[in-house]
Amino acid sequence: MPSRSAGVIRQDWEPVVLHKSKPKSQDLRDPKAVNQAIRSGAEVQTLKKSTAGANKKAAGPVVSARKLDEAAEPAALDKVSVEVRQAIQKARLEKKMSQAELAKQINELPKVVQEYENGKAVPNQAILAKMERALGVKLRGKIGK
Image 1 (tube, one colour):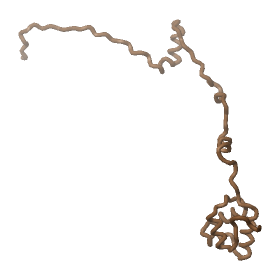
Image 2 (cartoon, helix red, strand yellow):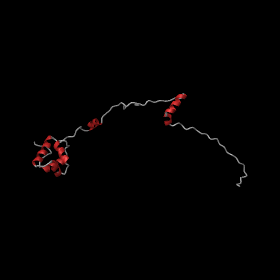
Image 3 (cartoon, rainbow, N blue to C red):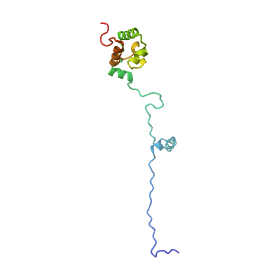
Image 4 (cartoon, helix red, strand yellow):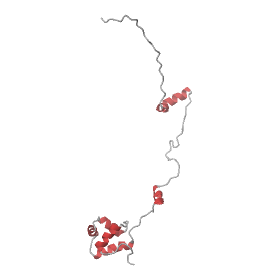
């Protein structure tokens, strides 16, 4: 059997205080908690959000991205002129080349040659120089003057 010490047995009881934790903001927004607070007569704070329940954005000056771009840069880039388009087509046809053959000779895609002849391309001096060498005509600078 275990032996007990001969000393006096004392118990040292200290009071324990339990504190309620603050309610969390999520619990305060809970509809049940709000209804209970209203029923008990407690003060309930309500806030109306600016666009609550509306399918609208907040009113303010609306500036489109296009307008911002146009303010900073010119709206449209220069395209290939009519004279250059006609000079490319005329020289290519005189050499009896297709657009694909010309593109292969200048090491570009056929789509590039097609865009230059249709006037949809933005002029690139390097490509125009390749076309000048392949076709033997002047495409840069003043044409036909």
